[in-house]
Amino acid sequence: MNNRIVKLIISIFVFVAITTSVASINFATKQTDRQILNQLVRKYGVTDDSSFYTWNKNNTKLLSISWVEQGIQGKVNLNKLRNLRRINVEGNEITSLNISNLKKLSSLNFSGNLVKSIKINSGNLVNLNCSSNQLKTLDLKKTTKLKTLNCSSNNLKSLNLNSLKKLTTLNCSKNKLRALNFKKVVELKYLDCVENNFVALDLSKQLFLETLLCDDEVTVIR
Image (cartoon, rainbow, N blue to C red; front, side, top):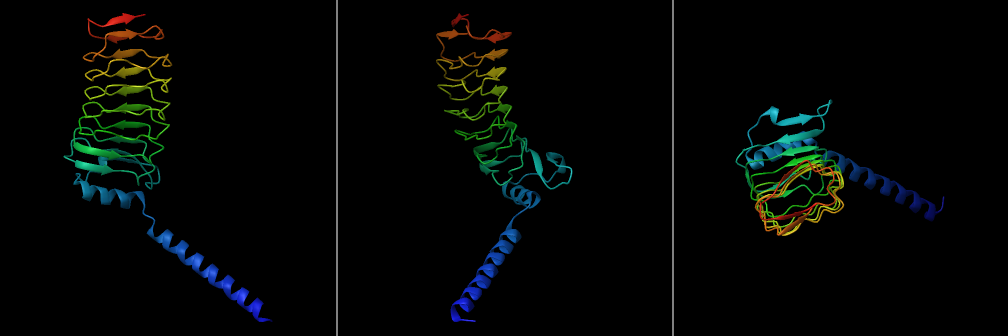
């Protein structure tokens, strides 16, 4: 056997050995949802209560978190829990909520916090309650399945809803809005927009609207 063949065989063995070692390390260091959750519970000082969580049938995938009024302060990052469908962190003092990697999320409630901005990338989101925060902007372009939105009591000056063609319930009261961009929203049934800066409100496309809460001085176009 010549030297070239020997060197080639040795190189192949070395490559296989290195690849196997790297794969073993990655497998060993990959954390389960339960391990990640335990770390987050300790980090954010949350009460250790099993009723706060919902798991899949095998108890391997964390599907929902309910950390309501747990005294959580500052920045919260839940991105490692990629199986989450539902999050409720209402009534804390969260200043930043990082959920940009959670593509399976269908329900999100972070009302009553101190969040100024948020990035939502879940195209499966159906319900969103971000009321009583400090939001100045709200990008909903990717939340095309959204049906219920409560963004009341924030600092929003504009709100583009044209990607939300399935939206049926909207509460955008107590903001600084001067207009609503929702010409492509055609299934809206409930609208609360009191205490904003509207002069006129065009509802000519809202043929299914059943409930309208609006300031008396606003001119409503139907």
